[in-house]
Length: 367
Ligand code: SF4
Image (cartoon, rainbow, N blue to C red):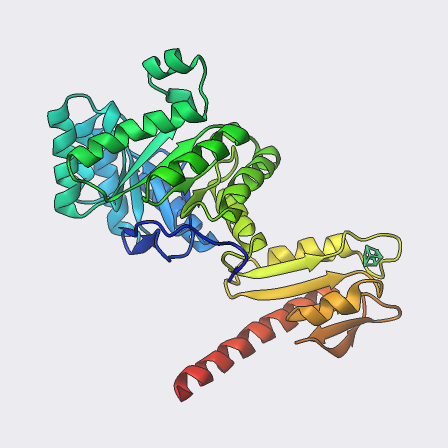
């Protein structure tokens, strides 16, 4: 994948069977927003997230009822689950043998003996911890010291948790330092990345609605990833959690960090278009959502940019009159009329995916 980004090599940890850090791919996470005690709905949402391409899913475990439900949920899904716990260390102890990761801040647990119990349980079960510092819940003394949340305050808070973990010889953790402000978040991650080698979980917290949050996250998370910082991401959106996964994938695909599914290259369209580019792109994107194989499709409205983009893609369509020209593997192949454009494109893309699979099976069989 990308060779223009020099990624910082962090310590490798495992969240269930998903490696995070080291040379492993940048993973994508989201969080359920169902009531955790509603086991069926939560399992359904976890499965939807997995189908959309999530690597890891986080589930809130605010109390013991939820801890019981979490155990039932865990038995019914295969994707690694992070148990999200705040303050009550006993809940962390309760799910330490079930969760694939505990999201809990050691500095918020209280007495050292309680922290030790949680760390012992994590060690015993070989479960990592995610320490999550958030500008909205900074310690009071830090708020007083810095006047208002800023990158230095986030880093100082993070290092307090690091000191506690170091004291108990625990290095199986990842770290996040989130704020809803891009500048503060980016600066905090840049600073902490120079200080610790643990994997970093990136995100702009409370980024906002689907559109505003996507833009904000793409800029913030994109800046950090392009600098080689970040091992796992969560795009926080006030939207369906499945959208968080889709946007996460689009960010990774845009930076050429990871690929999954159909990548559509399309022109914005103008009066030169020979078919309705926007409608075709939207319809096709929806129809091909189930494809997880990596394939690039170019949809270009006319000959101005059509041939160049079509030749560079696996499947390319260049608008022309009276028929549009379809390219396969860079060569002109068939002419398609506007009437059945989306049907024909879908057919061709599915055929190409199936051909690619056969080809790679043959290569594997020969080797
Ligand atoms: S490729 Fe053609 S149709 Fe598309 S925006 Fe450019 S000039 Fe317009």
